[in-house]
Length: 140
Image (cartoon, rainbow, N blue to C red):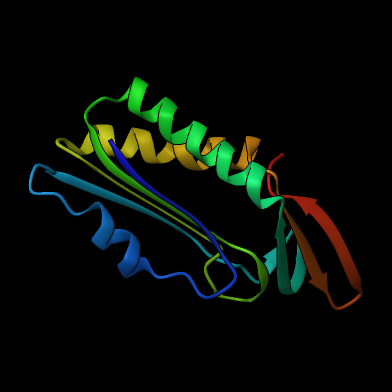
């Protein structure tokens, strides 16, 4: 399985991720696009700021790809891009694109990738509200 892992401080490109996972052997392509929403727990969000310990974050993202390769050998390619820095409402902090011979495996691998990323990758976010700000781990 081929993988493309990036942590960027500029706008993420859905096209870059989907182009990377294109494969003539793929019958299914699944793309997860995370966006900054305007409400958290009933509070209006103004913006978010993401920070990461990049060397460790890349290693953890590589582990995710390795586990996917082992658990779903049908996966052909995966692209995981995460953004750091300040993002406004509607902007994209994370994109995961997966291609596989069959759609069900692509869905399973994509869900595993985002769920595991949020649990294990050292990325943190700060939420900004009208009445203050709070650091929140990007994982529970």
